[in-house]
Image (cartoon, rainbow, N blue to C red; front, side, top):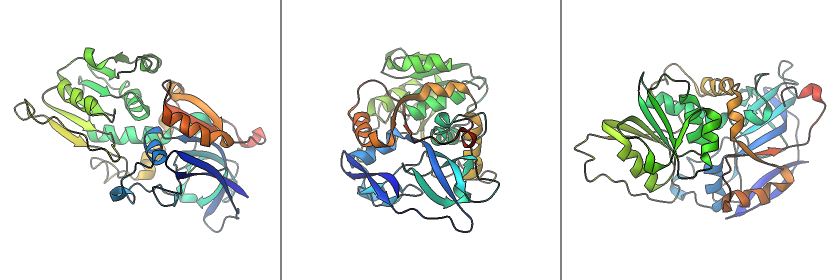
Length: 331
């Protein structure tokens, strides 16, 4: 029997078992090493706050059940192939699969994890892939002045990638002083929204708050652009389009990971994008995002702790039982 985490009702979840099966042609059996909780989307699922109008769009690739629940949901899983094609057996792989200790999927759903990327860090691939897509959308230029508003998982990942760009200025903007630790680990300047520098060429907004969006627009210089990455669930935020918004010719453009950015869609597939994100995770600075852990048995309680808040958690890592080290190099 295999064990998986299910969201059963708003703010409640449980572990359920299901029969296992052997892989067929073109499939692989994966034993999970780690999975990660995507705090933005999964907290909305945990709270039962996914609007019915977008429930179909919000489906995870291997979701079972229907939103708002009961539903088996998640998409950050790292494991080792136990059965399948000879070239994959024994290799670590990433898959957009929910929190489950073993599973069978098509081999096309698996992305190999490079030897220089530890398993804990590899669960961040989904957030880094989202950040890659955002930067393809945003297209920052040499010497740009950029602010990233919201230093959560996605905003932090955007800042982590942007720190390698030849920018004139980069600030990570957040109301939580604890995010200064993340910024320091990345070598990026953290500032409170009240102290952020204006006249930005580009603002990337990731705070999922009305106040963050309003402040992001204020930080733009004339004819600047704000890339909106936040997703608000059932909320309907007010956007400040009065005052000087039109006179200053500001722009707001959406970015989301469901489709490859139009700027790269003719030349990159989603598999290409995810493989790139995985290679970028060779950077040990991403370990700063790994802030809490539990085993699978403790996940129902951990989900509610994450939702209730307290502290400044980023990525919660779920740890699964180990097996001989020979099959888990890099774990």
